Image (tube, rainbow, N blue to C red; front, side, top):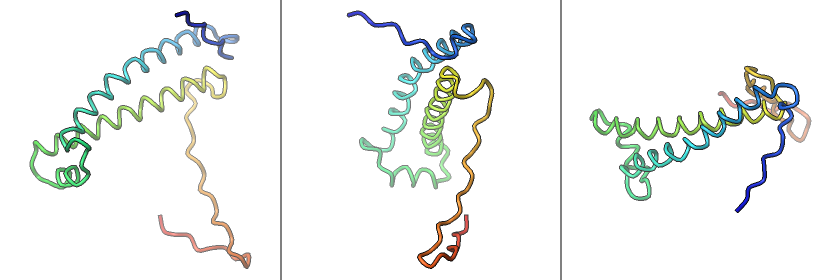
Length: 127
């Protein structure tokens, strides 16, 4: 089985050292995702074979430290994977020269509600 080399990223033309560093970070993160996903699945299994939401909610609302720790293990596992996805996205955008290094992603601006059929602005729901 032969693998073809990855296509050149646009950043490689202007900053090959940075592109090489980003590719190494991407390889590390992708390799680490599996380990964290397995740990998350083990934590989730504490709440039933199919992750019973009722059991998780009850543990979330309890004052018992052992159950709260089980909840926190699931929450942290999910947060870790979300953070990895965000980092991989940022690395990929930088490699593609879509976004510059260190540039923060702006949250989307709130959109105005579409007018009703008569052209009047609709009332906005409270946040």
